[in-house]
Length: 201
Image 1 (spheres, rainbow, N blue to C red):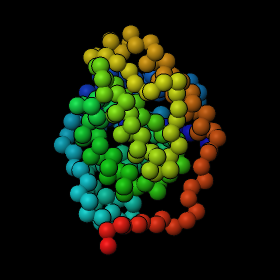
Image 2: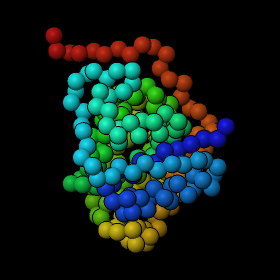
Image 3: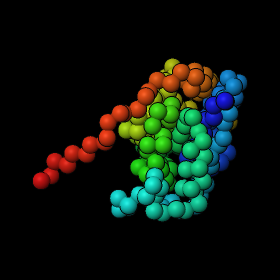
Image 4: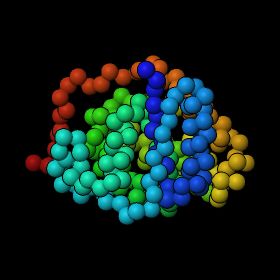
């Protein structure tokens, strides 16, 4: 059975720099026999996690259309790529609001699936954004796919990104490495029941 990767475009601009970077990853994945599907975040207001702790059966209590659509895509995915522009030195807030809910409520479903972050910025803030997005993966036992440099492209518009030959090479390498990792599972998951230690007594 073929493998499938979901690429999450966490930019409100569906044809901007983030989407251009993701397309480079997507093309390479397809060239390596991996099916892809892109999820567009869009521009609708995003409900964040309220910390209610009432996630039921792997699902957030706020069942808006954007959340449900992404959750359904991820259920059938073997790997995940999350892309975001840099806003004030970090990822798009709407994207993080959605990912907080998805990863907290459905983390067990995502465990073991290779994942990576892709960042686009005009000039700075890429490494901080990259670090923040990677935390979603490492806390959920998702192997982080490597490349030959940090997964970022630079430019104010997609035409600028076209000139970032190093950034585009990083994206292609990322796609090839993702394809390899999908064929060679590297994690078996935690066999123990989760333990939560609260230090405030």
